[in-house]
Length: 114
Image 1 (cartoon, one colour):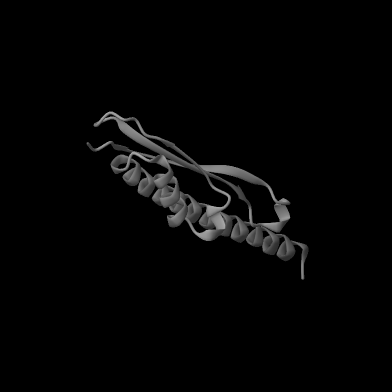
Image 2 (cartoon, helix red, strand yellow):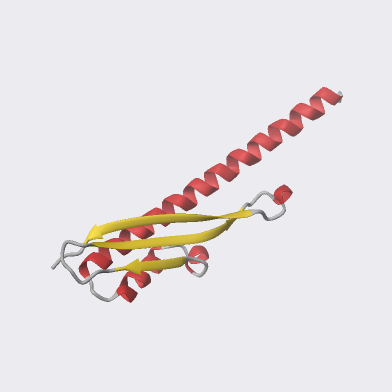
């Protein structure tokens, strides 16, 4: 094997790992956004914010539910916006990056119903 071949294989492996990381992160963001939307639906129709939090945790996969932070703002006035924010610390799955991580957030809002 030549040096050029080894370098190309290493570069291809790095690109492959980056692609896997991007797909995993995008999937996680989609799950967070779906949970935030579901929480906003509950918050808009139910005056108890804990029910919205519980619904968000039900929608999230078990691996995320325990680590997720859920904030709910629900005004009492009909027509005002109920807001839900879901965040989680995501650690990169690539072992070469030594467990680097970052926060992912999803927000959703919906008008409070009378």
